[in-house]
Length: 368
Image 1 (cartoon, helix red, strand yellow):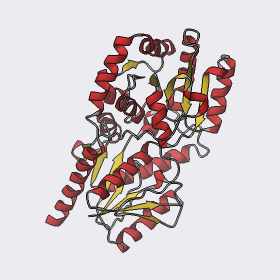
Image 2 (image 1 turned 45 degrees about the horizontal axis):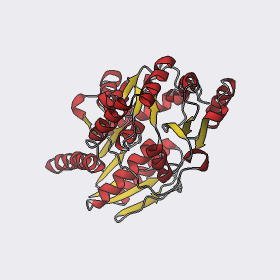
Image 3 (image 1 turned 180 degrees about the vertical axis):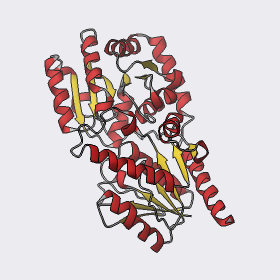
């Protein structure tokens, strides 16, 4: 099978959807499929493997990329099936069947999501138009969680029959590189979900400031990059006088990230809303106790294998972290149950189910 994948989310650093693209491409190619990754610019990191090819299409503009460049290329290269993996990106006039993966529709669920966008209302209209086109013109929609499926049905009226829930997998990276020098000698609590308003880092830092006096040898380590928000968070850290106890690492490459995850005493992920919550699953798979929000896709993935907290309650976040640090029996049970839970999520299983969707669509097309 010749599969075209929208790889724009893998052009820069690999975050959530970038990891999805990487693992999807790798596993599809290993099963003998030809995978063509479609970019709008030169990627920082190439995804390489047997039967994996890259193509940079003309037009950086999102709408022109999706509605003009894509259909021309898909027809010219005789792609069997096209997979838009980043919530949007399905062309109206596609020469081949299209599949859409929706990780979340957070812009429609979070009040004032577009408030800080330079184009405000226009950004919302553009997002809605592209989303509705993608949902309408895709033959099948893959949702990464039941939470996202419910959101699509209730908020946008998508037919349940059109949606297939396929969970993300998890791949535990190999231990290759050492931790950064400022971390390796310290005990630390890790948040590696990226810096974004909905990640709730403001409350996490405040919660950490409550318990840091009891755990003076612990640091709070936050990965990811967002210059404006990071500046605001640094000001909060200074105001709380915990400068020496909070470390912002910036973007961390995958090999170091897995060492960071393994070395943590606790993963704390108090995000307000997530379609899935990859950092939670990564913590479980690495055998690290997790404190996470009791909301959205996060609770669905973690279930009883994490300490679930109200992300809007600072004292509850603090109590959750403290509980994991001092209660050995709880820690051991979370580690044991977390590892069991993580085994239910593999990229091989995910890709087998995705392939099942492709084959179902192609079989229906052949019968017409």
